[in-house]
Image (cartoon, rainbow, N blue to C red; front, side, top):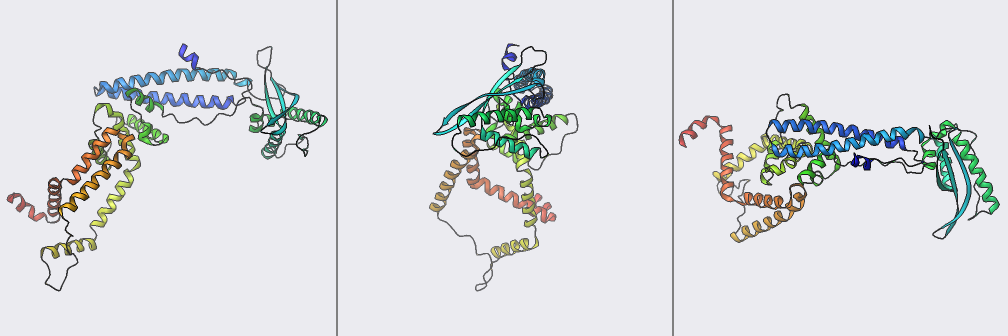
Length: 422
């Protein structure tokens, strides 16, 4: 209860945007409650699969969410109790401009008008009050905004503007009385009292900014295990995608297993290469799988299908067959084929090319993926990747295996002969 009490903020006198703050708090409480439901379902899922590490992380995150929900609910009750006393209303809000003072900002003299407001509180003997300071240019901007928002507003006239750096004392006093009458006329008009421009002009607190995305329960889970998922996503909005995806998984956990996605093998390869199979990285592994499915899943699938469609086109297959025939059965001298053979390189050139390629991969990959998979995992994965590409014997075996698979698919009648031969 002590922790919750410290987290609750008392509305400031004259905060005319308390209704917007209340809406933000109510939205945050609803979002936290929804996230608690997701975490509870994931806890049941982890318990059914006997994953003690995930259960510990989720329990700690659920406790943090529960404390936030309780504090948010308490803050919501405080705002709801005070909301009616933080609204401009005819007959309840009184305004007075007692004096005008001269100010000098950066060598530019001007006059500032001190505006005192009093708000009658329900069930209280004494009203609440606050003071705001405004220049005449701010009064003029308010008047223009109100005329634009309420075109049919009549009877609210602003004192005329005068030229000159500073008015005479008599002129300042006349303008003070005119501005006070102007504000009193506005506060007697219910439509003007509800205008956003007047509330902003008379409020002691600025309007609330849009609530920034804090990552929600995903950030709390990551803080519990010591991993920061913010760099994994690169944008706070991606955390909402992860929350929605995990929520969908929770909703479907009682149903049939979903069909594997096209990008799942790519995700498995990514996890294997960059060493994310440990239980400490279980959340990061799941987040990367979701992000790959949403970010590159459609693009990779489309490119692979386009590449396959282009590879089996008649013109390309004909060219490949012609090149293969030209290299196996060269044409007589004077009749060159389209395929003239590969340019041979010396051993020194090949070694230098491999060295440069290795250095570039080991420099580039950790800088791109260190925030996503960790610096050590990125270095180890880059080394494994370049070693796999530059290993001649495994690559030759892989190429021959792929060639055998293509030959068997194109000429199924020779599969029997190949099986007997091997």
